[in-house]
Length: 143
Image 1 (cartoon, rainbow, N blue to C red):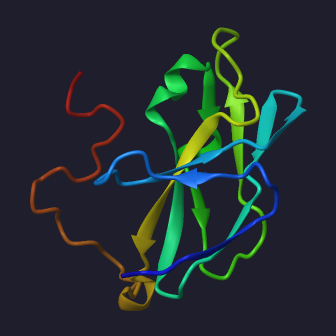
Image 2 (spheres, rainbow, N blue to C red):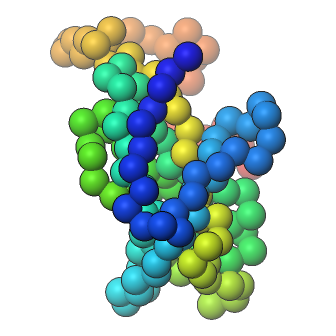
């Protein structure tokens, strides 16, 4: 069992898991700040993530109804970060609704951190890929 401590910075902050077996816990907006085409939502939550883990903040599947897109498609909350978690969105469309305070804006997923088990090694040449793909990308395999 992993225990993640959290602090409410706003009395309206919530973190909840709707169904047993759901991968993520929903978080809500407590305040909206609009700057040009970007919208920053405060969650009113700060976390103490244990070393060896990190939190991934992902958009909820219902985001398609809003006309918004989460910046970078996801957020990373490192184990050392203790500040308020915020979600940054930009308007992809003039259609749809903007989230309001109390709306579930994103989900938090606990992820293991295996960074200490990874080593990058510089080489002069890369080996051929086992599947033969090579340098093909951006639609190189067809429609």
